[in-house]
Length: 327
Length: 303
Image (cartoon, rainbow over all chains, first blue to last red; front, side):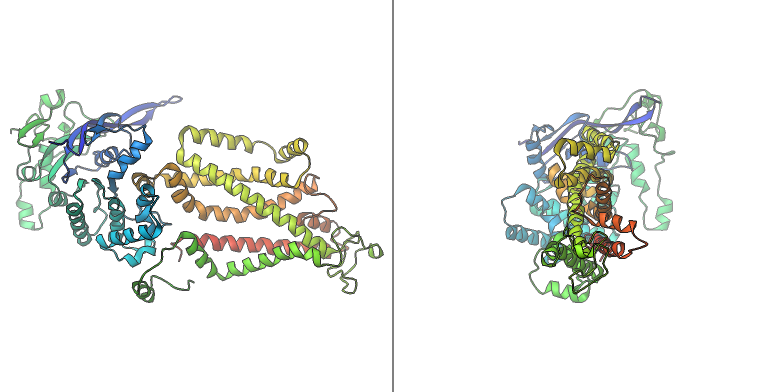
């Protein structure tokens, strides 16, 4: 079997945060991503869910090499990326693109839609003539559902959904192999959200893309992903096939996330069983010892404070990091 | 207002009608600038003053340094003698001197400002975008330059290279770019964290490409305003240097020097002050309006 498109091994991204010191600063590492491993096959979508601040976006940026990882490896088609080799990095980025959360902020306000979509082409194909570029931009605009005649408009003249389509067009124009979608629909209206999700899925089929789909919206992730990873304070809690995860979540945190999704029927909503979590997210600067989730976990016992639970394969394609997953 | 508003239904119909040619930021800016009446009028007036300064002295019956010995006292305007604005207290034709002074003032003002613009934007954008050690070194150099007194700096240049007209651009430009660099660096720092910069990096843009394509166009609005403030400042600075004997020397002249001379005989001969002052004021006003128009024209949001 050919190696998976993307292999992430024990990836750690720590940011030094100044936590005191008068003359000489004391730094404490903020472990935004702490020991995450996964494989991504060609054409597969991996959903990444978690609360705000759990390291979802950092993980995405580290995979794209937009942030240098503290340790760990990101291998692409079986070979490691050397961050120092600029030419190799540029060649690698050709195959990896990103769609951002804020549609307007991710587009240069002084560039027209056409220039924005054409930018990756200009970077990677300086030999293309401007009519060629224009033709490809126009085709791409059609593909994402924008009128090619709008190429002279500026981002602020578009709606949020249209801006996100421009962002998607920019990400897709080089026909990448992997697209990291960093909460691409969180800033959009519900009606537009469905359109953009479906557009992403269509493009995925047409271009045989792999996707890392970062979101905190469980329904959206369920719709688009093949597998889902649950992150908490930078650590993997559970990684499973979509259906197993949504049918039988094993980790108490995943269960809590699932039951937190409101049901649009007040009677059912009141009657549904709720997995309890206590209190707020602990500070990522001083995470709890042992299992990071134990301070909010209804099942926590002494062992949880003593040792961090390893990732255990509890079923085919389902990994859980919890001492008490059996109960 | 714009000639064709693309957001209007009429504009949309035009767009849908067929092939739309791509436009650059500059084409767009030029189109918007032409729609700004104050900016266009300013541009025309500036062009007239510039052409008059360049060509005018050749067409007048008197040159700027020629003394009319028969009228060595300040003569009121006399068309028969060809002194259309009269003469100064040494009997030299005031119009010829004003136009010739315009040459010097405009050249120094515009060239020195552009020197400052290029160095300042380059240094500021690189320091702000690259950050780290590069930023530290560049900005400490700027701090160092700030602490050198201007007159001292100019005197050193004069001693080293001799008195030279070009040197004045360099000296003034070398001082004026400092503030520009700080302004641009601040703006760049604010832009650096924006998502569209990250997007540009993700789509394979090199540092140079990102600075030229994204950072510079986005700081231009602020820079333009500062440029329009700098041109008048430079024109005044030049007159200050000339007054100290470090700039242009008699019988050459500039607007700053003419105003200086005129101010000395304000009570007996206000004409010698008012005429160059009017030229200078109109020019400065026009630069301000033009700068305002440019800032608006370069901001696509401000339609």
